[in-house]
Length: 175
Ligand SMILES: Cc1cc2nc3c(=O)[nH]c(=O)nc-3n(C[C@H](O)[C@H](O)[C@H](O)COP(=O)(O)O)c2cc1C
Image (cartoon, rainbow, N blue to C red; front, side, top):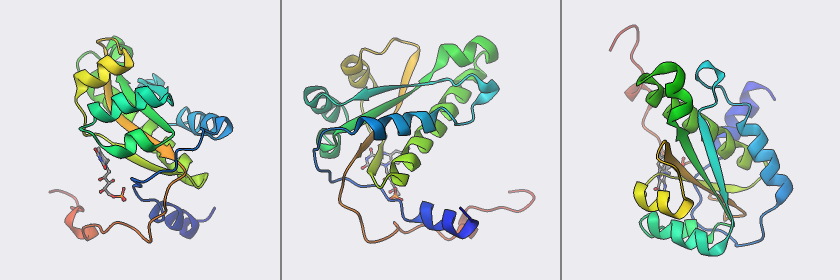
């Protein structure tokens, strides 16, 4: 892949909120998960975990925990990506909280792009009630849910969601 192919690849991904509820493709799922394990992480501790959710009742409960967002119910698979605080804090103390959140976000981004590489739709979903998600997924206290990544066959959009001009983000040498 050359650099223009890469730009084309990332700019043709967008968040999709409408899915066909077809059975999850196990091979696709295995590919997506193995891409996540190539992600960089602080100290190579890989301070992230994922719960693979495909059971319709659990997806419905997750959708409710995610402020009733219907795409969490509709998508055949939801990858609930979490920061593993204990793994990162065992080496880095309080700073490990930040590293675990970074690790989980990067792993989730890899999975989102892996889904795109397979032609699957996805939607990063961060608006949810932490405690409700914890209850639905039976998460232990040191695991903080970061993202519910909806994945599946979905309606493609016609183009990229608008962005700020890059100058709004970039500061040269200092703020
Ligand atoms: C941290 C984070 C949280 C998000 N939470 C939600 C969400 O709860 N529901 C939703 O529909 N989209 C959510 N999104 C998707 C964004 O709305 C979307 O990425 C943004 O509007 C840009 O659009 P694009 O993904 O199509 O490029 C979230 C994205 C991120 C990175």
